[in-house]
Image (tube, rainbow, N blue to C red; front, top):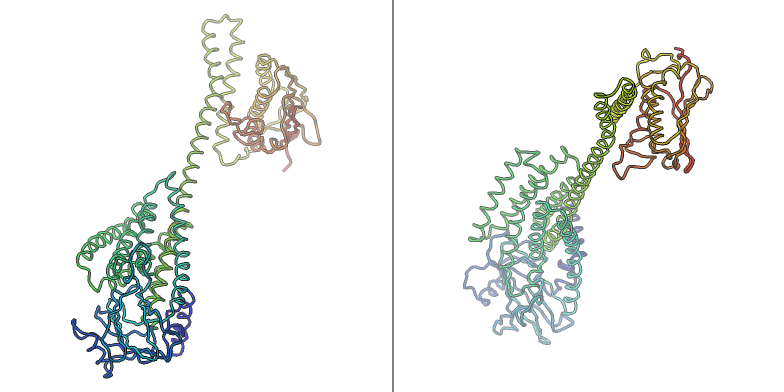
Length: 626
């Protein structure tokens, strides 16, 4: 077990060194001359460097074997670490000593040559004029070692983290090179979520949602926390001491947890879809918001431990809610939201493993920094997906409303003329002479036939599919006799439109459903008269082919292209084109196709642009044999 633990610890420590520079126990860090590093707990608030050095020299304290060694659990107590540096073991005389723990609250350094007096050495960022961006990621001191001499060094640290001494001695050029690499790495990590943030801001200009506001607020507080754990806050605002940055960073993580509850309620819509969990979320939000002001007033050493324990349970709870919602409503953006809390839990697991394996502190801090960036990116990505899906839904609703408006306008157009005609014929019948009444009744019957055909077309449109007519309702009828009245009606309409209607019908019998065939022919003739050229010709004729008698309706209008032919039997199409202006519903050929399907008869259409349209219906001349 110990062997596997050591291998696993070494593997993750290697990852930390590759990603965040040399913060561990390598040649660029602790030098061989530091083998005497010893740490002791401060025994008095007024302790002096001389007293602490005597305690270390007398053998009191803990020998530090490596920089990642945990001396004690977090208590807020101060510790002193002492060691000696000999110029004989170092190639240069001037070095920068850094304590690579960005979240440590306080760090001070004293040094002396031989048995001389102790000198307090100010950190580099305090030894020069402070301005925005002039700070350091870690506490850094400059050490000048006189030639052929040995200096003693004492470092006093205090904080609520687990006490470690990742002290690294480097030349100024090595240190600056490491810092530049860290700046580039952290800048790249932070850039990804903020690109998503700016994209979300562009989306808010056209579509506003509450969860976008919560996401942006969470991104801000996540960034504040990341600036703290990475040390960038001390770099940007060097006049803030590390205790103040720790307070800001810890509070930002607390606010982040509270905001995540409101974000979850808006993002997952728990008030509508999961009222039981929503009550729990509201109660948790109240608890967070009540606790945060108290912590701000009475900041204590247990704040970070409380965030760790509460954050662990909070992440588990939020992950359970996200997974529950995804199971109920599997959506891509909810799946990404599940990953958000999975990443949170992974970073928490790294922190717990850090305590067990005694990884370098920078390992867990780096994991938290990367976790914040990944979480912000995933949250933004999921929010964008949800907004895009919502926008598509709104566009679909708008499109449906537009089509509905076109449907109403076209239906009004198609019904207005025959209803007006019926009203006109009925009014004229009241005072008509007996000789005129027959003509007026024919016109009234024609107009009512239009209304009847139109209503049946709407019924076809409302049905999912055309249902075949019961064969027992089919009859053997003479085609000419069946269509006699229909043709008489359309001869009047053709004369009104200056179109010559000719018929060439076979005297044979056909096996059809009479009423459906009459409606089908009325739709054919109505379509031909409406879209055929004025002053042209329309032919309704038959041609036998085997057991079928083909009934053809041919006009000499504009015709249709091949693309139009493929769409001519669809609803809301006029000459094969979707109607951009509601001049008609375009249900004529659609109804022809539906009626043919009900009678189970074949339909053919032939056309060339500029040469008219020919539509044929294949009718059985004898009853089918079973």
